[in-house]
Image (tube, rainbow, N blue to C red; front, top):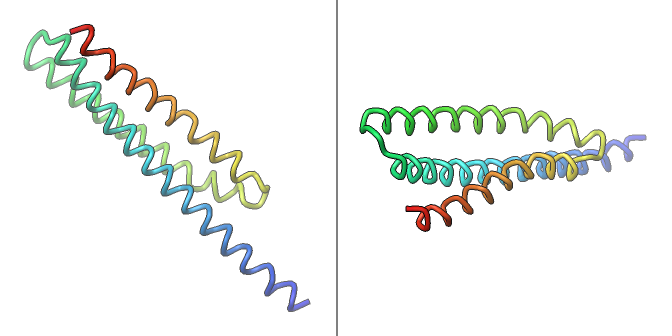
Amino acid sequence: MPNADRSARPQVWLDNVLVYILWFLLIALCILAFVLFRTALKEVVTLLSVRALSDAFFLQSGTVIAALVAFIFVMGAEPYLRSAVDRRQLVRRFVRLVMPVAIVIVVVVALLTLIPFVA
C-alpha cells in the first residue's frame, strides 16, 4: 500500500505543474490580447476623433474595462483548471479557456489590419 502512495505523488505533482504552466500560458495570451485591444482602441478613437476630452474618456474607460475583464477571466481560470485535474479534463478545459482569447486576438488583429484602409 505505501508503494501506491509514492507512485501517485509524482503524478499529482506533475499535474499541478502542468496546470500552472497552462495557466501562465493563458496569462501571457490575455496580456497579448489586452495590449492588442488597447492598440486597436487607440486607433479607433483616433479614427473617430470628435473631441480630445471624449477621446481620452473612451480610451481610459475602455482600457479599465478590458483590464478588469482580463483580470477576472485569469483569476477564474486557475481554479477551473485545477479542478479539471481530478476529472482528467485539463486539455479540454484549457482549450475552452483559450478559444475566447484567441478569437479576441484574431478579431483585433483583423481590425488593426483594416483600419489603415478606412482612414
